[in-house]
Amino acid sequence: MASSRGVTPMLTACCLLALCCSPGAISLLLRSRRVDGGNDRPILGILAQETDFESFQKFGSSYIAASYVKFIESAGARVVPIRLNRSDEEYNKIFYSINGILYPGGGVDLKTSEFSRVAKIFYRKALEANERGDYFPVWGTCLGHQLLSYLTCGENLLTWTNTDNFAFPLNFTKDAKGTKMFADFPDDLLQEMASDPVTSNFHFWSLSVQNFTNNEKLRSFYKVLTTNVHGNIEFISTMEAYAYPVYGVQWHPEKNPFEWNNRTGIPHSRSAMRVTYYIADFLVNEAQKSNHQFSSKKEEAEALIYNFNPVFTGRFSSFDQAYFFD
Ligand SMILES: *[C@@H]1O[C@H](CO)[C@@H](O)[C@H](O)[C@H]1NC(C)=O
Ligand SMILES: *[C@@H]1O[C@H](CO)[C@@H](O)[C@H](O)[C@H]1NC(C)=O
Ligand SMILES: *[C@@H]1O[C@H](CO)[C@@H](O)[C@H](O)[C@H]1NC(C)=O
Ligand SMILES: *[C@@H]1O[C@H](CO)[C@@H](O)[C@H](O)[C@H]1NC(C)=O
Image (cartoon, rainbow, N blue to C red; front, side, top):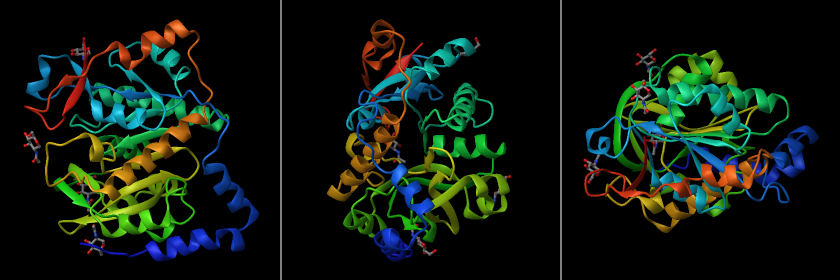
């Protein structure tokens, strides 16, 4: 399973970048790298999802797995749950109060769910805001990553791969050089990511490289950073938009340190922990570039996830803890 395809050129390209790239490319890279002195009190929204499985329904009509919350908190940001079935006015107000949004994994329909409807509202606002120079990162994990592909091209191009409960290394593409997401990752960690099973995969469906490449909208919007192969299908495992701070991972960085139930698919090695921490650091730093804020301390306090208590769900679900909402 291990493969170092692409990683050596990528590392070399990073090292040589300062020597051989155009000034434009260098300034783009520098802009995408960690900045200090931005918003050091970032707040990320996490989109709630319908409780589509029975064991969760008695707790609420929507939920957020607590691992996503811990993932963001671990890198120095706070979390606001984005609840479903709210008015456009309320979503607009939240958008201008938070510094980025995360679409988590799960199992609802890409086209017809309330999760998808609300994701689309924030996605559109994010693109518009970024076009005006109002920085606003959008992150999708697993179903959230698949949803990004749907929001970008307007079609569900997924194919069944049944990639449920597998830990994989990543196959870096040659385009991974000059990437925003991995810019601050140490070389030794990138090497480990290419050889050790550090990414957790729990997805029945995947976006194949074939369908991605055949779709002009996807191909021109996203750069593919990594792929994986499962059951003869090569699928997109990591992507980032060329011109917007929009990022998708088919794997689950939040599970490595915070979910313990599924033994084979969730790595807890030291390198797996480092992957999570560097991804969380990247995402929180992206949020630090946004200057949105709540109009008052009171409104901020009322919106934070601290108003809810997570439930220990590990005895009957694959999530150890989850937050529930009406
Ligand atoms: C959203 O509202 C619809 C219509 O009232 C309702 O059927 C559904 O259960 C609600 N979903 C959530 C997650 O609150
Ligand atoms: C491509 O997308 C279609 C849906 O439009 C899907 O039926 C098909 O399985 C996909 N093929 C591959 C190779 O991903
Ligand atoms: C990486 O790509 C190679 C060649 O396509 C494939 O055989 C291998 O399974 C891939 N590795 C992973 C972890 O997906
Ligand atoms: C993951 O763990 C949960 C809870 O133990 C279990 O119900 C589920 O079947 C597991 N899933 C896989 C794919 O092993």
